Image (cartoon, rainbow, N blue to C red):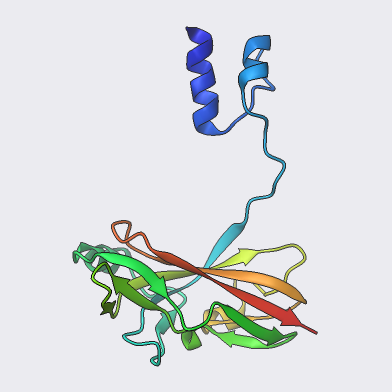
Length: 175
């Protein structure tokens, strides 16, 4: 019985039993994944556009804790986030102004819902494709700057936990 409880804990936590002393658990426990998981860094907060043609309001930190609580208090049923494009082509050294992204929140009734609080996160990569340093002047002004060739991802998701919707936009940087 004790082995089953430990196994359940390992399965739930996603861990492996390399450190345990039970040969039974070592055989039953899932191995550690060698795949790297993407790591995203919050680069901005924003309010969704009312239409695909309107820009978003974006700032590095738009909501205080109180404003966040107030914004999430409104009952909104957001089914999904939509964008006119899911791929952005950039060249090395370009700056992407995040307010140029067109993100629209869509309700479960298939109606656009303006001014839904969202978070914009950028995937941290090594070597870097976009600059994500703390204190970067571009980030402070709502832009990301390309510093390497390759592909990066921007994950945009609703800020409020009751409206769990998101979208990923892929940036392709060429020399």
